[in-house]
Length: 272
Image (cartoon, rainbow, N blue to C red; front, side, top):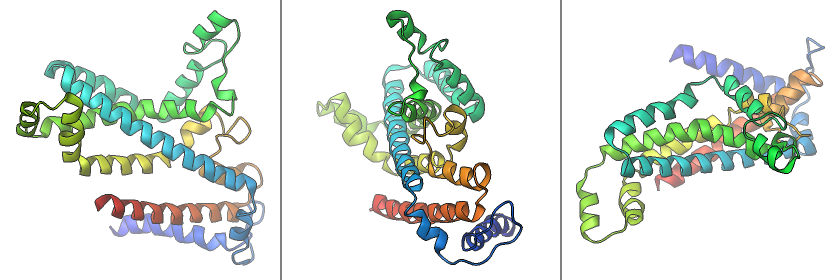
């Protein structure tokens, strides 16, 4: 616990300290400027855009992942034999085992407007290339599809195993009362799995905040800044464009505070 506390607290405290300074990579020292970095953030249109992109990414990936996970888990539980479940579960685990960067490169090539296996049928039919990653309207959703592919299949295996642990008596009683299949799961199975499903949602929410590598490889925040999340903008300001590490640290601190407050509030509301 002492080692973990040091590894967590030292970088956090250091980030908070330099967020009140005007340090840059080109200068080894900096002077104290108070809340100037934080005040500047709220007049930074690119910062506000990154918040919007991050929120959209969170809602899109978490919602789609859970919907697909629950749907596939129920489908496997209802339609597949025990042996088929084991084989499919093994296949569904493979995407999440792949290194994130490797998966991003494979899917980026699959969405290539000229040679991609996904976009080629459209080009063959219409004669026009389909560049999903270069359109502001489709780029974020396309990258989110890859994220959901990795985690939705994995979570569906967890949902399947959770369903297998439930006692059969409530299912039998519901069917004796002439409940439809969707009613059995909507009113019997899923309410019994409320706690683990909430936990899965929180795991995915935290994981979605760490999607820097996937988005960076596939779009680098583009086209323009349409897929630039908050952590990508902080990285860009701190190390790529201007070297303003104090300005970038202030973003990281705000992100830490906002996520901590939001997750605490949502967790308490979910428990109720």
